[in-house]
Length: 311
Image 1: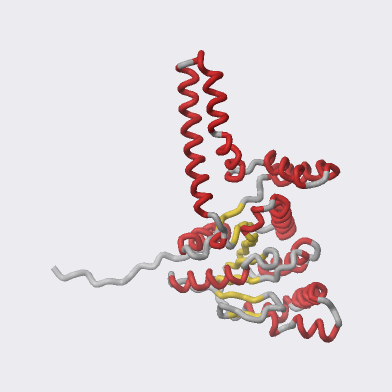
Image 2: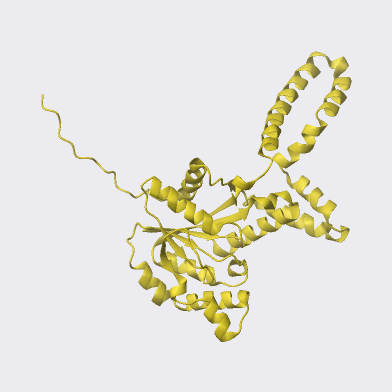
């Protein structure tokens, strides 16, 4: 049984950088993975390419010969790959053992997993070749600075989950580029301080009930800034909905409510932060993916041979 990651996400979300960092990490820990390029428009790679779709078809050739634009040419290339799943791809996959680990670096156009069934048929072919596949969806961490971008990223992730019907891991990439880390650390401290004062407030309210009302308003005034920032640490659907309604025209309120309810109702979309500067962050992400595809569960225990010491 083989194992595979299907790395998808919007253009510029760091998919190739993730694949490169994952390859370097696995080399460090003595683990073997093979990176496959599925982007016919790719040019430079920071990792060794095990399979390359450009050996089958190139976007530049399609645009030149057929006169298509970048998006139309890319879809044409991927549909050509779909037509050659039983030929080119099967021959390439036959070069790997049953327990090999492949990582497919996909293009960034969301049409490939939201409108056309190319990736879905690609995944079905991998399943027929006895691969356990997990979708890894990357979203740029800068999307969390704008609620409209964040909701659009969540909906694209949910669309991929419904379309591909596979184990799914969502990642907030480029966390190493997030600014104001000190401010975030301060907010975390304020969060725990707020919890502590809530406990203290409960004790004082039961101990001195006559002064309950006065103390209540004192604490509200004192911790109002904390309450304001906490909504960004632990965003709730009502908070996201209020922010959407504030930023958008009134005629979109029903649409905003429907979108928030869709994301919240099934509780399927959650993100794991990825900081490529930290090996522990990469290892944690990899362990979550390995758990989804049951990597290593059928591996045999290796018993080292040794000679007992002579008495």
